[in-house]
Length: 194
Image 1 (cartoon, helix red, strand yellow):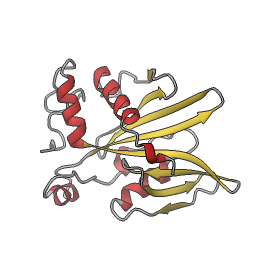
Image 2 (cartoon, one colour):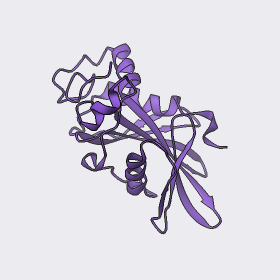
Image 3 (spheres, rainbow, N blue to C red):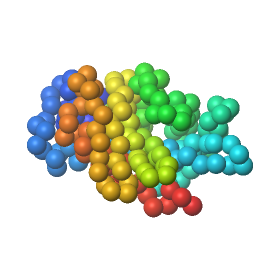
Image 4 (cartoon, rainbow, N blue to C red):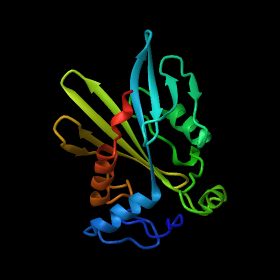
């Protein structure tokens, strides 16, 4: 079962108890149970720059016209969450205020009801792809609604190298940040580009 908000989250400081940073298997299991992945991908439609929000399976959940700020949500589930992510998204890695995010249901029996009551809530991991001449990167933002939002850094998708951008006040231990960066890049579905 998923962990209740405030329960043991390995590598996240301030939880009721913190598992050791050397316990990679427990961190991976916690990520699998408690973290929902989303991806922001830049695209050009006509002459307009857009950011497309996709789920972990590659399905399009909505998009934002970067110049106008227009948001269109196509998601059937998690509409409020998709709208919040797209509203905060911009050309730069804009912060995603944890207090502005709705509780995200865990994928467990009765999890959706409990999340709506804010007893159980999943964390969110957002990968934002950026391409330019000479680089192709996936930036990662970790958000736990009502608790914290942290920009983690990026993974170079050409070389596989990762660059952490954590500060001391982030509340996430180094080992957990590395695992989250690897999760956002490594679980990126192939069908992100139809």
